[in-house]
Image: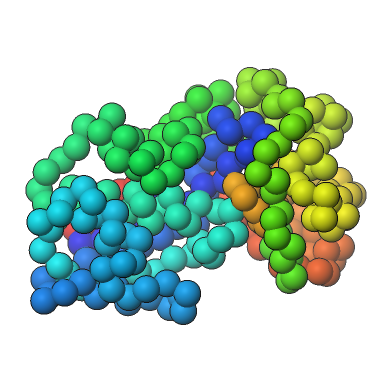
Length: 263
């Protein structure tokens, strides 16, 4: 059995903006074991029952039998792409499946929300839909890239953002219309990152604009910066890579896929 959970891009300036992406976390559930063992390739994460996936599963079903788990993730930890949310949802799903105790959607939301604060992001991971996706009607008219700087400045995103959040419907409408002028005024990157991080982030924003992109925003707590452009814009990724040399630019596709189980 395999559990796949998508990553997310979110905005602290407008918390209702939450979309799943084509990157994610896969948990392959192996046989029962004397104790929990979790194999993965991240040296910063534990391999035993203290792993977040197992800890969440045991909080839902304390009598759960230990198993061998193998985790593969394309979500780097601590980058703002929803890795902890994905692990939490994987843990709840693992408990439901191995414990043979299905939860209602409301109960699943509450279980995940005990660990993760953004219920809009939780909803889109669990169902593939939330207010953002309802307004967007599918993200096919946009293409994206994620920019991760080589040298991290902490914190990338302030704890308390003082800027006025843009209206979600207006924000999504501007994305639909590729209205970069509205986005620069009402959803500026400068309002979403810390003062120490701003000079670097502003360079990214200018690079996105110069290559025909429509906006750039900090995802989660950062430092990931999400760069969006019209889907019809050719060579957006290579042109962005030519301009941005102080970090990595990789393609990022928005998605509407939710958590799912393959047996």
